[in-house]
Image 1 (cartoon, rainbow over the protein chains, first blue to last red):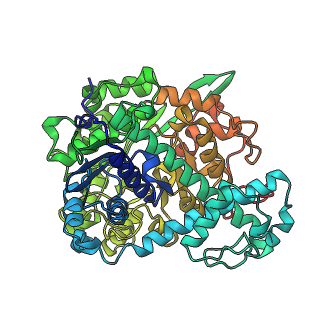
Image 2 (tube, chains in turn green, blue):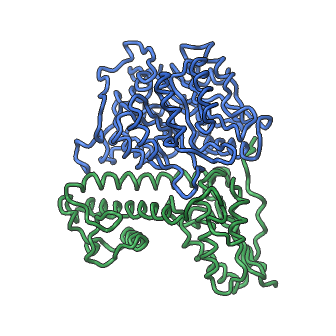
Image 3 (tube, chains in turn orange, purple):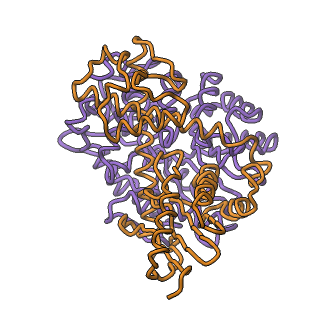
Length: 260
Length: 346
């Protein structure tokens, strides 16, 4: 017996034309720039993009989340960011982004369709914009990225704990971990010049040596928290939409633009 | 009581429920969404062999509860932490009368905590006094993200919350269990923000604040405030089932909690019937921090005994047989990060 909400039947896959495939790639690439602010990962990698339908007048994208009760503010941010990203795709036409199976689906979908903005969507439930909330989580993402770089440097022996205060971006080996840190620094307005110190607070201020151990210890907690939430959300999404099979979480792409 | 390798553990399950999520009790679509969300948690994190069917999950009744907790589950004492959710369920989600009748029939095994909602203002405050008298309350369960008419949540720092907490101090309701969920007004703040717990923990030194699921998904913020406040404790509800699906992540959670708040302020709970206690207790007693995670201190047998039951027994003044106690009764008034005396990276 299984009465858990299951996905509606997905539309049949159609062979896309070359042009359609190229456009579909652009659409996916645009959606890949949309991050879950809490989990610090793209919605495409988290499996939150349920379907992409290219049709003669535009594109319709359905998003989904791990539970009906995921925070509505973050849900709104992802839907709104997806709409913004898709509107930047050349020749896309009309953009429609819909959130499925959420307790605030109707409210969010209506607000997004009307370009009502966050305050217009939630009315009295909201006080200010989501900028401050977004910044809080960008800062957490930076803290976690910084911790990963520092721990990698310490583990490899390229720096000693007592010299961490003098560690600069130049000293970090090239690679994904460093790239991630640079991206997060840019997100919160910090410089990315090679001479910039690595271990800084959210305003870019160098952490005093005596505070380094505690600050790093707290940074580790931030990183563990973000990673753990991502595990949990992935697992719940797979349970909700693919009966626990993570490989069953896919994006259904259809193209009815070019009839053959 | 659970016994393994000659060690005996007194077990308190500090967070259990007797709920009714059946269709007959649903008030609207949100009641259905809520129990479905619970069921997904259950299915996602339980070992396959202990997954229930959906119908059993929506309502299991007192007899099944007694069997799962006490006959099969090694639990010596369990504490009801009911969620009201009156906007989602006709007769509420937690079944007050049924749970209270079960508690009266098994007073040595069960403690009944009730709930309140400060948005009920004076009428709710009067009701709290009657409830304290009727149930002999030692604790309450608060769900700050509960929907209530047009409101989708409250803060512990709201004016009426303070009045209720003052009443708790006066009435001897010393154990305040707090659950945070994702919809709270205003929406542009972090709904899981635990800062209000920090404030009330400072202002109500006579109360214990047990933060359920140890502040997840804001573990780091929770650890930080728990370090500052001596009366803030961690409930392991929701965190502990990761022991099966994500043992390394569970090791990290335990490592963080032991470092920041210490083994004396962590309480086991299955969150029954989200999960059943038997497998959780068996796995927890067997659990060790993986050897390659050298950044964390080991999880000792003494710590396991405290977490599985002795910490909550102390908070609820339960009778623990002498032979099940540990020699180290625990430090009180610990004010710095419990592990901070060691080097951060050693």
